Image 1: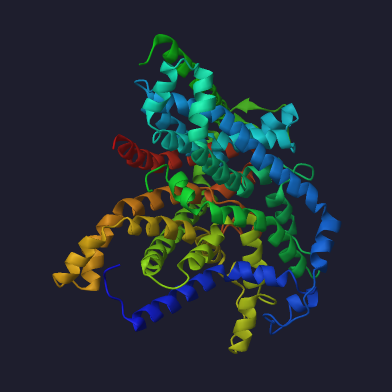
Image 2 (image 1 turned 90 degrees about the vertical axis):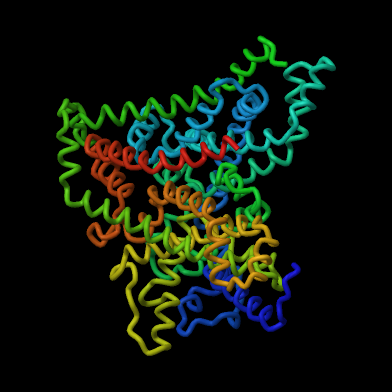
Length: 276
Length: 290
């Protein structure tokens, strides 16, 4: 930064930026704080910000009452399962497109992207009926399938943009040395692409974890992930703010932490490489 | 060095992805299209019959459709304006050097990772609730009458919630784009006597053009399908005051079990989304060339 910035200007910028950050983050902070209050304190007027009797009993109650861990586990299985399955399908496809492009590769990529633009509600009824008739309704397998399919275009695209940056000569050299196609992908390409694959994995776990159209419509009690579990709090009975907050905090904490690690990849992944 | 075998292998490896996506696209689409011409209600099995365009006629002349269409446009437009303008301002702010940049960045990006059902419930209960919400407390403190946000202004409240979720995305992308701006160009302009405003209008804004377009197009795709936020907060109400197209079709098909009518709505939604998609594809396609 060659531009001189006066201390006053810097102070104003610092103050403004911190205020903006605090305001935007506040709803999350407030939720976390409320989760440590008693139900009575959670709705007390005026509300206390920090000076209340901190308690963790809400967490205990949420876990005890509502089978929290089952829903948590459903979320893990659905988001991680669909991402791994998606990667297994997408890595070979992205390899083909990046290192053995054919005439129509670009069209195929664009077409894959276009499937992402299909509004989910347009195919809700057929998927619902197919699931009902095949017994996939309210099963984790059913949701893994749907999540894999809706995120597959993003996975292929992200991998493609990462693979594109790996020099093809290295792969060619391994081929000259007699590596088979399988060895080439498994032992040469994959290790080099680990950072790209890792960020793809991370972003897709986040997207699948937070997906709330299919999870709400295709699950009931059994396979409901956290998105649907939290939605069941929308018809409250009695005092429940503190418990709602505890459940919410537990639902968003893992992904918030993962998300903070993936900021950079997020931009790239969600803009399909258009902004880096 | 693409040998025949290699090309065959490449095609083989791409085929699972292509076939799966093809099925995912064609099968449900064909079914939706087919159902949309049927009289088909899940509550009356066995009475399915071909009705031609009747479903479309009902759907497209239903006043709820026009209200939902209007709500969808208001929701998408409102959120876009708030997030793009807010994102530019925040991006400019965070692009300045200041203490704790990394932490503030983390705070700003956080809402994007909050699942829609959580953010909807938290806003609905802990902030917008007219009795126990934080806004009600503040109103009471200021001596004002509490305001029932989700009943009095349901659509505006949902716009606010969804904007909160998407502002981080817009900010992050616009900030990333700003950081790739050539500093020397700005300094040269400054030395030539360009004020802050003209530096913004003539250098930064053109540089941001592409990022802004990307933000608008990608958000539009997601915003057209906003669902959980409505389901959790207002259920589309009061009446249909906060029903968007996605929610209307959901209600028709899974709450009223009208598969035919819902499917006709689905086809309409697909056509509308395609109009947006064409622009986005062109944009990303252009990027692919470079």
